[in-house]
Image 1 (cartoon, rainbow, N blue to C red):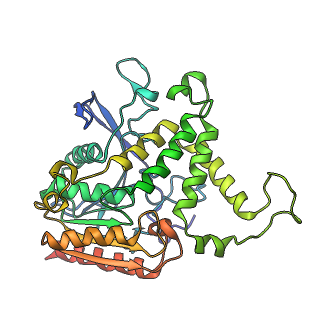
Image 2 (cartoon, rainbow, N blue to C red):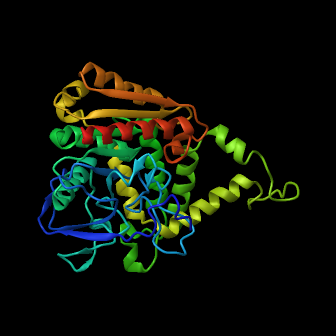
Image 3 (cartoon, rainbow, N blue to C red):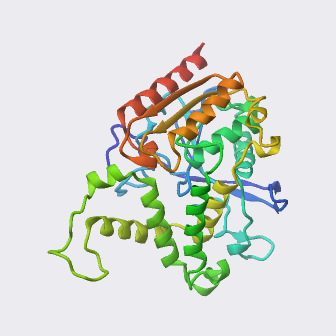
Length: 379
């Protein structure tokens, strides 16, 4: 474990919320928990808080290590920590596991207080708006009236945008990275194929697989393998794996012969053991349903009218799931709405996963933007 440039050992905390939460679909959660990690210190006037919103398979463990024996740090450790772009010596950083998640927040694995059994398939489908409402309650818990910044990549970027619309006076800066104002038809199609892999798994049992002491392992494995391909770029895959064989010549069968096959099967197997099938279904539906302009007659300009936040928008050249054209479209509307926005389009061979990587222009731009936010707070 390298503590030199890390927040070091961290401990998650589960925060209970006993007030009912009305969801966008009309259902109500009688109560809920959010699993949270925090890094850095909240200043006296509570103005230096940064919320990090996770993508589809992310969670609250953004940075640091849970034990001395951890082989890897949190999922965005290269971005969050002392001296890093989101500097924990300057900012109080909050990471959380969203509602419906499977890493400690209330979700399908949680006990339904009405039945005293796990929710399973009975857990409601939640949306980005629902997450933002629950995150507002989290801000209230910490006494944070306004976030210095809300930051997220992919589905996390959607949350940052939704925050700026739903709570315009509570967000100073929104950093929307490798994201979009709504999913393309192709993205919705990919999500449905992934869901079908899980739902048609014989071990799915209509979402109540826990009652049968099993999980839809095969479906999760296939969903992750397919999804992982779409998060990467052909150039990056070719550079890393090419057509390298693991075997001595063709075997004329269906076992592992190419390095890329081995890699994908490993990723699929690992994911199936750490992620919940019902959570995967709900996270992808939240992606599909995201459409902040819908409540404004599908007029994004009208949706952005009352936004007060300044924006940082970033895209990556080889990201074909959230292509740069989608980010440029958001920038265009922000400019038309008279909002303050900075945009960077990064050359990268990492595909959609580039928002998790360390491409130097991207890291440099994030560092500069966050440094300017800190200067604002000192003014």
